[in-house]
Amino acid sequence: MTPELAHVRARATGPLPLGPGEPTPPGMTRLAYGDGTGLALPVWPDAATPSLLEEYQVAPVNVERSGETRRVLAAALKCCWSDLTADPWPGVSAPVDDVLSAYRALIGRGDDLMRNWAIGALRRLHDSAWLEVDGGVVRLGPRCACWPPASHAQLRELVRRLPGGEEELTGLDVLPVADEADEATASVAVPEGVDEDLLGSFDERRRAEIVAAFMAVEHAAEPVHEARFTALRDPVLRRALAEMLQRRGRVLLQDREAWTSGYAPEVAAQAGTTVGESERAVLTLVLIHSVAIPRADGLLAADSWLSPFPAQPEELRRHTRLPIGELEAALRTLRHAGLVAQVKAGEEAGGYVPGPQFHRLTPQARRRLQEELILAAGPHTPLAAAVRANRR
Image (cartoon, rainbow, N blue to C red; front, side, top):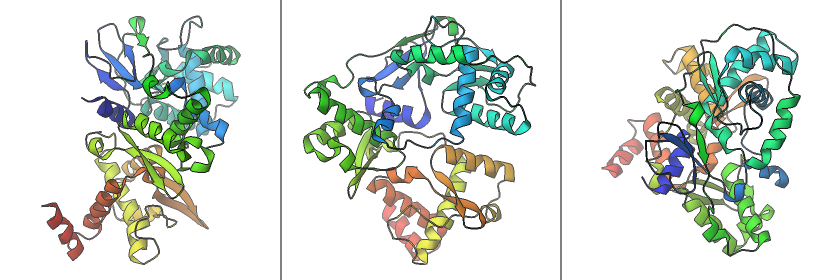
């Protein structure tokens, strides 16, 4: 596997599993377990994190119920980080009941609505590898190992200030299952000098500008305007930025004076995905009702994948054979992945439109998706026949 593909897969599907003795791809941290296996996670340049976007007043990717998600993560940290003299990860296992009790003590409420929100936050944190949840047990996930050491003092102070939970809550049988890990012998190996050959030739100010632009195009919710980042305007700095992205299987994408990043076409097909068949079917319905139909009516530009015409929930229910519960689960997964967004529609309950990930489509991906939508919406039309003929 090439380093570019390794980075792409880690971004698309989560921490990259490593077999016993398997080398860590360049530019990645190795989380090693006692049996020789491990996980690999990408390292950001100069130990920067997406929190850097706050300095530039750039909005990061939205997290559903972000406040509850942060509080549940804090409650899990309180329960799983038992030795504050050590690093947070891997910590110790803690019962889900204890985490929910700590969360309940933190917010000062224990009603059913708060409990349901906490369960949803546990799912999101598990799916994004911040936590590992196995039935009634919670562990800190591999992403917690990537907290920079400089932040540990602040995290320790946070944990000391958090109230401890004492009430017993019933266990949960609705959570996903995580793999077991040898916590006692886990270790973290962080590579040194990531991208130093590219960044080392720049002075401190220009180096900081390149890193800031990198974090913006990779982690901002929307394309960022080049006026806010010198490295997007300066051709020399932008060339270094493009090389940093290329090493991670990514490319710069420009829309007038705004920039973002996307998967390089040569590795995109090999990236893999956590989106299943149900999610793909529901996403197709959303695209047909919010993009294809308005475009056919002349209400959308031919090359636009963003739409002000939400697909109504009743339309999705009417045109799918999925049970209601499975449909709602698929929509939840698509929202978390940024593939759909839920919006209000005047006096109506709202609907679904393509999410911010559609900003990141390369021209090749846009063309391919356009063809797939033609085949899905009108498989027996002359245009669909032409698409199939071109693919032969």
